[in-house]
Image (cartoon, rainbow, N blue to C red; front, side):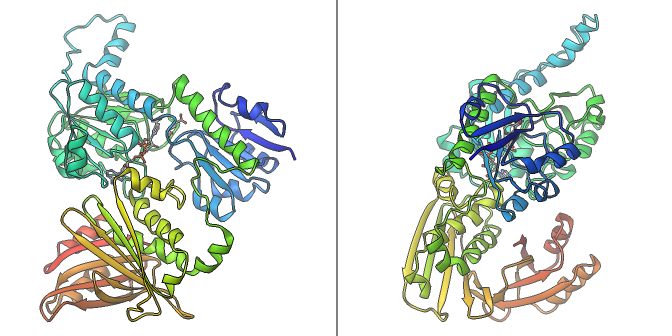
Amino acid sequence: MMYNVLIADPLNAVGILPLKNAKNIHVVVDTGLSAIQLHDKISEFDALIVRSQTQVTRLLLENASRLKIIGRAGVGVDNIDIEAATELGIMVVNAPNANTNSAAEHTMAMILALSRKIPQAYYALKNHQWDRKKYIGVEVRGKTLGIVGLGRIGAEVASRAKGQRMKVIAYDPFLSPEKAAKMGIEYGMLEEVLRVSDFITVHTPLLKETRHLINAQAFELMKPGVQIINCARGGIIDEDALYEAILSNKVAGAALDVFEEEPISHHKLLDLPEVIATPHLGASTIEAQENVAVDVSEDILNFFSGSIVRHPVNLPSVPKEIMNKIEPYFNLAEKLGTFLIHLIDEAVEEVTITYAGELSKLEVAPLTRNTMKGILKRHLGTHVNNVNAMYLANKRGITIQESKTTQKKGFTNLMTCEIKTKSDTRNISGTLLNGLGSRIVKVDNYRVDVIPKGHIVFIHHNDQPGVIGRMGSLLAEYQINIATMQVDRSDMGGDAIMVLKIDKHLENDELKALKDLDEIKDVKAIDL
Ligand SMILES: NC(=O)c1ccc[n+]([C@@H]2O[C@H](COP(=O)([O-])OP(=O)(O)OC[C@H]3O[C@@H](n4cnc5c(N)ncnc54)[C@H](O)[C@@H]3O)[C@@H](O)[C@H]2O)c1
Ligand SMILES: O=C(O)CC[C@@H](O)C(=O)O
């Protein structure tokens, strides 16, 4: 059988040799296609390889009748509609480790270029201006580098910055003070990192929760004269807010490798002398390009030869015969993990999953993996799947325990997930009701009855008259409809919780307004 592979973005020629040399693969390299041309052509191909430029949309995939696999030659998969690919049974693979080093080196190059105004001075000199006074920089030695997102690249940047004698402070939801100490850096919550840093570099994925993570409020917290670096994804920093912060002299300089929209040739930020920029070059080295091309090429060959792929982004990996038995619980497991992680504000240290009643007779390992996927996906994004979830948890030092009990605990089947952090323990339980589908039945031991789907607001408050009414009125002011509501309390006048189902995603300003109401202790917005 011959497989047609389309390479739609520029890829390293040596890296794609494994594909070119394979007897059953016909490689077409066509990197200049418009979206419409790609749409017209895609139905001829069994595999598509892209970098960050080609947008792999649902519309494109719906026309890709032969397509079986997409290779992303890099880390970020935000240019690929993973949900659509999964729905259509198209596998997505990426190359998560292949460009880490290059992206970290590029970040360091940007920090140093920014601190010494190298691009500005170079530009002036090329324009025949010998000006030594205008381009006085600052040393990075002794300065504090704040790292937001301490994953693969963030951690590499941290170790390089220490080599430059910088103090490093980092925030990552999976980082604890102990882990930070082992790496010889400081741990801080996001606000602290923003407050104390002289340079701030972001290394998170672009997710719903990280879009505009660095916004006008974040800039307000920063030191005057702070310098900002983004070599991760456009959109993590609010570009309008950055522009204003530079005009008001709060931010002294910014180095950008990525933009909210790409490609660009004009942008108001590029008109500011304080901004230096590169056109998404973080992974553009000979080594990284060869590595990413080799990694995706090999995985595409693995896929077509029926071998195990090494970097799946969306693989449903559970064998069919086991899946048939546990399928009804599979979705519930992920949703319990997703719900619970939203209640957690510190690094996760331990996860315990207990299977009770009929569940204890089943093969539950895939359910544990799917729960972990739900937990990790919140901060690690769509590349987490039930194949790599345990590996990723392990790498972050999270202990996972699984236990079974034949006791029914009030339900014929009950799955309970507990997360321990340094100072907190939270739990959630769910069940499958005969004929009625899955339900969340307990949160932190409060009784609830919630279908694990849609937009949920979880509120922790004091049991006082009027709280529920104020909550309802405020949501009404924002035109937010409450679909269902559950309330429970520890005792009269004591701790209480509310679980609301609402008809839309709760925006940050709406969340803040709810938090500011009297008697409210905490509010979490959870999209299941
Ligand atoms: N410029 C380039 O060419 C280039 C090259 C490679 C990667 N990237 C991008 O760099 C970014 C990081 O890649 P990586 O391989 O290190 O990913 P990674 O998954 O290893 O690390 C991301 C880290 O961000 C953390 N995170 C998630 N939400 C957070 C939040 N709200 N606050 C703080 N931290 C949060 C996660 O816990 C995780 O540890 C991605 O956006 C990737 O697409 C860019
Ligand atoms: O394709 C590129 O060069 C960029 C890749 C990079 O942004 C990534 O996420 O891996």
